[in-house]
Length: 331
Image 1 (spheres, helix red, strand yellow):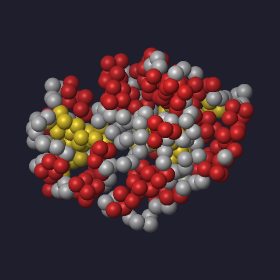
Image 2 (image 1 turned 45 degrees about the horizontal axis):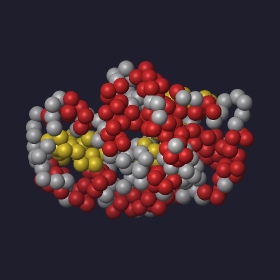
Image 3 (image 1 turned 90 degrees about the vertical axis):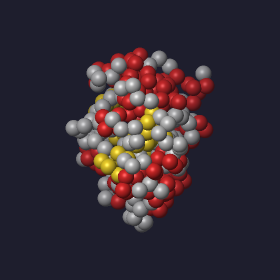
Image 4 (image 1 turned 90 degrees about the horizontal axis):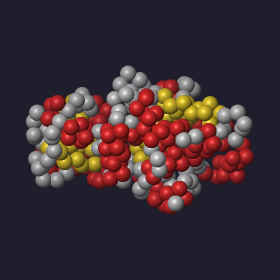
């Protein structure tokens, strides 16, 4: 992975390089505006990005929007990605991007079952029908089969609609722990949610990717963006969320204060953000050893081929692990 020493000058630059004219930055998200994006919205709304010399535009993803190619094409400067498999895939396909921060220490990817239908996580492998999306079938499903004894015979496609699940108490389906379980509750269903991270699925999630040329040629801008984003998340989690909520609801009118509160409560209860490496090194923290360990998991499960990914190009910890913003939490 890119060596931290290459960017040691970044720590010295600090605010001295913040220009009087703000740098224009475009951040692409991975879906419609929601609570999982709130720290970035907070940094816009409360002026944190502006204090760091940045004029940040948040470009929403969504069902009809694919922000991923826009990063490599130069139409975005930073991208909120999913888990590390996407970054491995970029490197495998010679797409010149790299991960510079990990804002979710645990992936909220989960399996959801009707309450009491199965004894425990291991018992889910006995479900007659398990609904998994196409992307999931080529990622965590292979790991579930290899590591936990799930069977392809039970696999059925998931189309991101929980109606089939609601109609059959024996069905198990994939879920994002901050989404589908809440949707099911709204329909009167009581569910058991099994977060894959609790069972060995060790990837980071909601990573931030940027182009390698930006890391090499403008590390000061990358550092300012990451530092300001970290502070935005601390301010959001432990401060006044009103302005961020207003921005999110303006971008996505389907959101409400109640929905956002419930999502954030789930994120906090599941130790998604301020946990793991972040407890010692600050939100956004990332261990390159853990990146390598998840790569080994993916190889062992047959998700990617051994030798197909140059790990040196996947991620750099040059911009994180510095304890930025931890004083805000302590105060």
